[in-house]
Image (tube, rainbow, N blue to C red; front, side, top):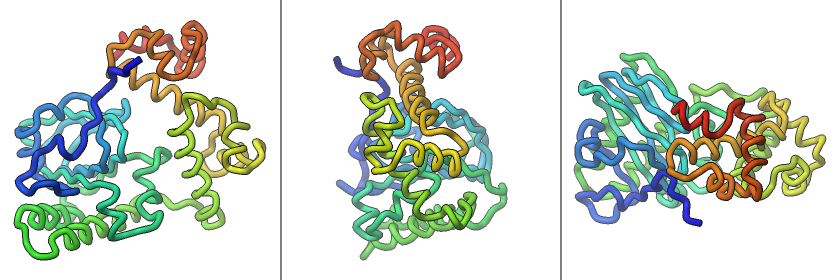
Amino acid sequence: MKTTGPPVLALASFPQAQAAQPYYCERLETHVVRFPHVNVPHAHDFYLLLYISEGTGTHTVDLVTYELRPGSLFFLAPGQVHHWQLGADVRGFVVFFDTDFYLFRYPGNGLYGYPFFNSSHSPALQLAPNECEFRPLFEQLFQEYAEPQANQAEVFCTYLHLCLELATRHYPALPAAESNPAQQQIRQLGALLNQHYRTKRSVRDYADLLHLSANHLNALCRRVLNKTASALIHERVIVEAQRLLSHSALGVAQVAYELGFEDASYFVRYFRKYAGTTPEAFRQQR
């Protein structure tokens, strides 16, 4: 069965003056006029940064709606569903980049370690309206993209790297005793959930994949995220169910099938237990 959920856009969906560039930067007010299809729910197969310098509106990411105002800064990883409603007075910048483009210049796990690309942290920062830390960086990114010259890709990626590194300072750090091994295991769990949530629903399944005991995995999740591992598993399934119910025309039975439930009635009971309402009632509320 083919999913009819929100489209997943590639960089090729945004024709550029410079052919086949693995990165993109544009003024937000220009971008939304050139590509009006971005106003409806969709996902990307690349990373996205959004910076608001003027105006107001809303930005919905994975069903959570954030107010936009000067100093709003967003970080989206591939696969996240989002859309916005922008006031006529909104000004800002949007930046896209492919994974390989960044990793070629900054190899290793750094890109995957940024807190704002991790589902346990908010994708949004609200900075002071008159902040002068990030706005100059986005202006430099735009100028570097708009005026091609020698070593453009290297300079663009350097500004991008600096933006990501500075943003990390605005996110709370884990306690020192937990900073490296525990955080790495939690990220690994998140990656495994994204890969297996349709077929694996028990703590034991993920503990085995991580070479941990179920008790150890539960203790780790409680310590780092203040949640049980089973709660994280159920949350991942419910978020995907809510995405499909909100952004597709699939019937409830079809959504159940997409999520690996053989029995639609069991899916309805599961959804009610962990979302607090039925799938149909949830859809009617959207």
